Amino acid sequence: MNLELENRRVLVTGSTSGIGEGIARRFAQEGAAVIIHGRRSEAAERVAAEIRRDGGKAIIALGDLSQDEEVARVVGIAQAELGGVDILVNNAARAEHQNDMETAPSGWLDSYNTNLLSMVRLVQHLLPPMQEQGWGRIIGISSGAAVKPSPGMGVYATTKAAMNALTVSLAQGMKNDGVTINTVSPGAIITEKQIEMGKLHGMGNTREEIEAALNGMMESTPFGRMGRVEEVAAVVVFLASPLASYVHGANIRVDGGYVPT
Image 1: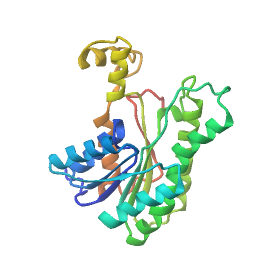
Image 2: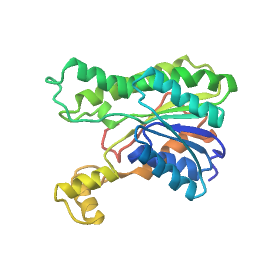
Image 3: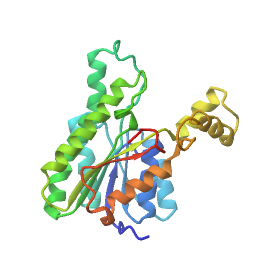
Image 4: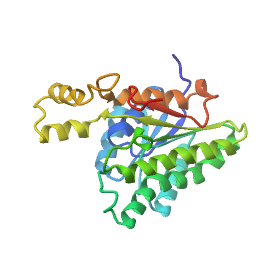
């Protein structure tokens, strides 16, 4: 299936590892020019170099999206090197287990600044030019935790619930301007970080052993396994494509049925 994404300019925040990296790689496979974003130069260089090695187009824009001036710099790099951004994927976030009642208000604010206000900053920069050109896509990577949080995930979950609400509010305010905005809510997804943590916790010596152990923790769910990064990426690139032009203000769950409808 041709998703008609060739030469589209895509900024994926937090794309130096995990789900964000997988999303960036999938866009590159579809022929889009991707902007690899993160805070660590070495990690960004690795992802960009591997995409280019495979024939894709990738540039790098480093920056702390909790800071106004660094957001402006990231947007400036995209403008200078690619002429703008057609598709924004808001993936950068901090997800930590925290005691909701013991986390200081400053800790809550830090999470909101990184997980929610980073999206606000980028949308304020990038939505107007998308509307001017008559085409654009904004996709937020939310979480099933927004509606079914586990203990110790209240801080993170409320930032994602706020992302969902903001997305619906923005969608309601757009009037047939060629831009759509949606969220994708992954469930439990196996990433390289989880494989590394599995080794540290003695879950196995090989990737296969660790994946089997992780999947075993999901036996009570409808699919009985964790999801894969590429399963999330596939939904994101579809939402970004012209084929999804009538999907607007939606939250698409990619969780194997973990969160009941």
